[in-house]
Length: 616
Figure (cartoon, rainbow, N blue to C red):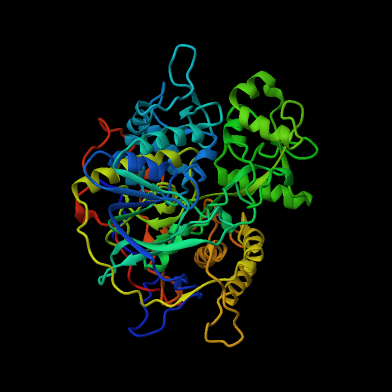
C-alpha cells in the first residue's frame, strides 16, 4: 500500500470551522504569478520533468525506452544541483545484521512522531532494490577487501548501513551515473539553462505543463532569454529544496525553491514547511563560502568514524546530552550546539578528527580534507571550525510514495516533496534513497496511468515581482529570526517584514521590477519564506528541527502536519492533517515483509486534499 497522506484532517483544536464563503483569504501576502515577457514559443511533451538531480534523472531514466516523450528542464547545467554535493551516502538495510525493520525504527525515532509509518515502510523495503538498480546502471560504490559493499555508520542509525562512493563523493558518482544514462536515451530531451516560471492549469485546476524562460545569452548575467510554454500530460517537480532562503546554507545557488513556489501559486497543498534541518557541521570559515552563500559540508560520516564536537577549550559538546552523543539525530546535535554557542558567546564550535589519523582521513574523506586545507585548516592537525547551517527541507508538496500531489497532473519527487517519510527531522542518508524509491514508483505509475492531454486555461492571476535588492536582508533575517531556535517575537517581526516587501502595483510610488533571473528567484524565496514563517508561528511546540525558545519539547496535540497553499495572493493555512498512532517506533509493526512491493498503487489512493481554511 502506498504511503499516502492520511484522510482524516485534524483542524484547529476544537474543530474550528472554515472561513465563510466569499471571505477574503487570511494570511500573509505573496506574489500571485511571476511577471515575464510574452510567450514566444510553445511545445508539447508527454512527461515534463523539472529538475536534474537524482530525483529527476532517476525518473527520466526509468521512463526512457517505453514509448513516452520525456523532457527534462533544469535552470542551470545538468550537474549544478544539490545531488553532486552529497557526501555521506545512501542508507540501505541489506548489510550484515541489518534488515528493513531496524531501518524503519531508526527513521521513526529520528522523525520525532511525525513520520508516516506506511511511507517509511515502503522506503526501507524498496530501498535495497533501488540501490541495486543504481549499481546495475554502472554506479561504482566503495567496497571492502573481499568485494562486498562497504557499510558505514551515521548519526541516528543503530547499525552501519550507509553505502558510499569515493569516500565522501557519493552524490557526484550518482549524478555521473544518471547523467550518462539519460544523455544516452533517444527519447529524453534535456533543456539546460531553462527556468521554471509558473505551472499551467486547465479549466478544472489540474496542471498541464509549465511556463519557462530559456536563456539564449552567454550566461545568467546576460539577460537574453526567451519565454516558452511546455504543454505536458504529466508535470513532475524534482526541483530540490530551498536552502538559499537562509543566508547560511550548505545548498548550491540553484536551491531557491522554484518548484515549490510555483506549485504553491498554482494552489497545491504543502506541509511541514517549518521543519528545516540544519546540518550541525558546516565549515564555519568565510573562505569556503561561495558567492551564493553555500558553505562546505563536513559530512556526518566523519562523526560516524569517531570525530567528536568540542568547544574552544576542548570540552566535549555532546557528552551526556544524548545516549548516542555525537551520533545523535541532527536536530538534537544542532540544537545542543546552538545552546553551547549562545552560552559561550561564539559563532562556531569545532569538530575534532585528529585522532583518526591522516591515512584514514584521506582514504574516507578526501574531498573534505582538501576543502578544509584549501581554507587553511588541516583536519589531521587542527580541529575543524563548524556551525549549523540550513541543509535540508523536510517539508514540501504533500505527496504520496508514488509522487502524486493534491493537483491532478502534478507530481513531486525528492526534496521538493513531503511524503511523510522524514517527519519532523530527516534521518541521515535517507534523502537520496527516498528520491530513487519514489522515482521508480512514479515511473511505474506513469507508464500505466499517464494522464490525458488537456489544454491550458487562460491565467487570470495578477503578475508581479519582488525587487532583487531585497534578497540579502530577507535571507539574513531568516537565519537570525527563523533559524535553529525560533523566538515568537522574532517570527512576528519577520512576518511583518516579509509582508512589507509585497508592493501594490497600483501604488504610484511603486518602482517597476524588471523580469529576470534574480527577480524571479527572490520572489520564489519570498513566497517560501512567508509560508515557512506562517507554519513556524502556527506550531506551538518544539519538535524535531522546529525549536521554539518559549516551548520545551513536543506536545501530543501537535501530532499533526501544518498544511498550507496560496490563494488570491495570500498564504492560506488549511486544516491540519493528523498523524495518528503510527508515527513512532513503539506503535508500529516492525515485522519485515517478504520483499519490496512492485504493484502500482491504485488511483483511488490520491493524496487527501485539505480544503477547509483555518481562520487566523
